[in-house]
Amino acid sequence: MSNLSVTNVGIVAIGRNEGARLVRCLASLRTHLPATVPIVYIDSGSTDGSVAEAKSQDVEIVNLDMSVPFTGARARNAGFARLVDKFPNVEGVQFIDGDCELLPGWIAAATNFLNQHPQHAVVFGRLRERFPEASRYNQIADLEWAAPVGEADACGGISLMRTVAFKAAGGFNPALICGEEPELCIRLRRLGWKIYCIDADMALHDIDMHRFGQWWKRSVRGGWAVAQGSDMYGQAAERYKYKEHISGWLWGVLLPVGALLTARMSNGITLVLLAIAYTLQIVRIYQARQRRGNTARQSLLYAFFCVVSKVPQAIGQGKYWINRWQNKPAQLIEYKSSNA
Image (cartoon, rainbow, N blue to C red; front, top):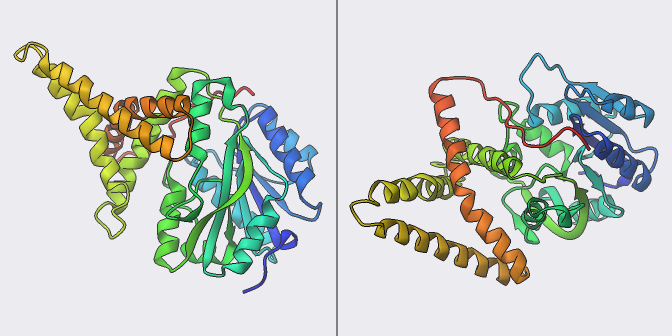
């Protein structure tokens, strides 16, 4: 297996109407990487000048065929195919989204780790929100990105992968509208590969979320990913998303609906019990986040929204199962605004 270095790594960036976020993304790649590193940008029907911006940065551009339903998985696969076709000597591919900025030193740290650990196919590091103080939703995302350092079952969309492993696994599943990275990681691990999170800053992310409705839609999308993941692998050895799937139905539907239906006959006692149950869940998650080193404020914020998210999660799960029952193609659940 060839050694990885900055000289034989390529970049696949995907975006759709990212505006100024894409400008920062491409600028970070050009600033922190040698000019010889190939960059492929996959645009998914942008109408905000993203393609023109990419052209001005002299990167390889793939305009995704939007007559076929869009998914991030499909975009990344298209970018990978163009990258290895035009640059066959590429041994590793750094996937990045157009709303992210690659940080200096990341590629060197990631390739160094993979060279020392040939059994690992994927490496990722600390993803941070660019403006965590801008809204409570940005801060929640920043807390979510803080994955524990060490062996991992899955990575996110920002990661460095060996091209040989990506090819062997068949790439991302283009039919998945979300959760495609953990699903790929399951197939990689079944092939004997490993995934690791190293203690290094990887990229800045700009979720740009300022409204409750955006957070709600993102949580609905998360529920879809939970249901689909459990449907695909919940009964397999991985038991992937099985517990989360049950938890969504329990806390998002069964307990609140049951409490409401029996509220009158119990003189409101079931509603009190429901409030106590939710409070205990918040306390449990709060304590877990404090053990991970979060402040009291961060822990409370994360715990509260984690419990509240069970309702939109259950809605997302329901949407998935109804869609599956009707045998309809999945439609992307978008939550971000197109302005930068």
